Length: 247
Image 1 (cartoon, rainbow, N blue to C red):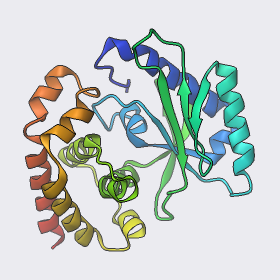
Image 2: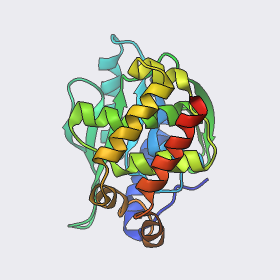
Image 3: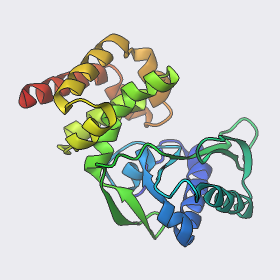
């Protein structure tokens, strides 16, 4: 499955993401310490029908290895010609600048978090876009993390991402299953209790403005116009159906 490109201007961003992914897959140490996840992974595997601009991973190496992994990543970025604009001292998170026309997108976010759930599952996958094998979260694990992400992002950073709502809606519509144990591990409550919390959160916090700010850059104009005014309502209905099923 090819990563969807709604805007031709983002072709260079897509190319840089693929260059980084190939380089990570070709480094045995990095490939072992990082598990590919998130929207870009889901889209490249055919689970998601939108563009995604970040490279997200779980860091599954040891604490002692992290300095060495960071050094390998920074050498990889330099070898590719990427400039580190900013980085985190806590986890391998980088904002990388690549050459681009002035005024156009020129930054790629690369993040390896330590939020991997002990209940999560991983599988080796050949990604056709880059012709490489990487360890990836299973769709069930991805879906569970995406359900948690909407509330977790707000609690940690005070922000809300409209793409989280879109992805939840898309995963439910396509009949994908989620791993309830990942939700329990991340939130400390059952899937039923958490989905009730999520339903209330979306009802209270999600607005057309929040959805539009995020999604108009990730969907084609046609997709965006079709979904923007029904996304919240349908997502709440799908969550309501799942809550009834679990009850």
